[in-house]
Length: 428
Ligand code: GLC
Image: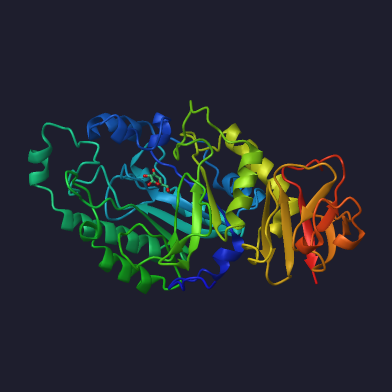
């Protein structure tokens, strides 16, 4: 099945497969979700305490880039501005920015430089939503949605001026940081019966889209501008799709975005951290369905990745070091290869190798129906140790019938000491 063509260049994207999302802003200080201003219905005056105290004195973008590269990530997408409206760079379009906090610095340029130096591609997340800007009409999702002064405050506001501000900022991002590979807008929530939201007219999405394409024609665009066709990638978040995503019956380029613990911004008290095994399985599961994984880190208000994040990244990196071959350049296996239970398949069409990822370790034998006669050699990927194969003709206690064309792999009794073992099959 062919994949929907993209206006932006997704050729590198579907090869690289694994990126880092970074959510960093004033909400790191609240340390209880990047939506804290909305959740707690804070006014600007209340939220200002974070602006006054934002001082990431331990910020070391080189260490961040090292952690990302060490985990096997090939690109990153950072929140240049999240819904709170605060900007990480010295934008000329406004004053709500890092240079006007105690840290007095542009935080974005050094980050872009550090990640580029590690050969990671650059992506900018930019929030369409802005709970700080004075022209942004207060709607039903705004922090001030229930404020008694909402109607009065809205009187002087002009959403068209906000759309200009949005464009001015995006123009800066796409002209002052060199080549940007991904533009990630977030998000639209059109008005409906009983709900005042925002969509393409409020953002002037068409104009924004044209401008982005003009400034960086190769750029990959996400799907949240509320434009039926103006997007390159679908971006399901916080869940794993059951199969390759399709739109109108056609497969599309897609990227799952996932968190370590639920919140995107740094959350001190969240206890729902996924394990390394779960995260590695998530990456494999995504690629086995033809997708990418964008895995999020929420750095602290001091400017560090916390110990839990570093632990997960290091664990993923240890696995990727030996198993990157089953991820990079790989995609969903051809339809005539079916995965046995507890397994995920990925396939590299260039090398014609098939990768069997074992989420549960069976006793001694793995039966691959339909594979007989199609595999030339098999090995464990972590140590390149041969895996012996038997076809239906030399398998004595065959619990299968020959019609199933079963290829049986003989595995060691003990599971290799890796998060998810992988058998590499060299196809004939
Ligand atoms: C959402 C949330 C958000 C997060 C994003 C990541 O829509 O509003 O906080 O940045 O998705 O996909």
